[in-house]
Length: 83
Image 1 (cartoon, one colour):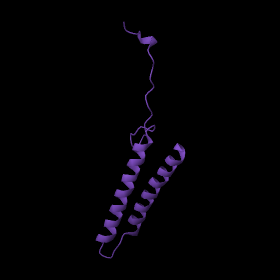
Image 2: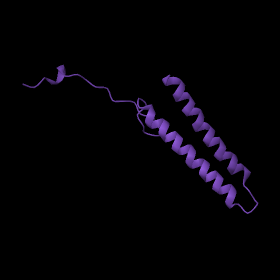
Image 3: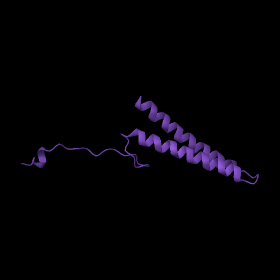
Image 4: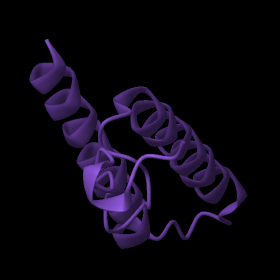
């Protein structure tokens, strides 16, 4: 015999992060994504600095640093909220 629809347990949809589409309840996946992004951004910044012919774009290097720092800040906030 099947449980009537109105007596079934209702599950609420899990909240997701608007930008990443990750489940905010699974912070490990989000932390992993942030670390990977920081590593990739740092690699791109280093490649830009090495490949430049002495005319380094300081504003672009600063942009990379700011993007890395913003992810580092989010990671820190996640670590603090979980503990």
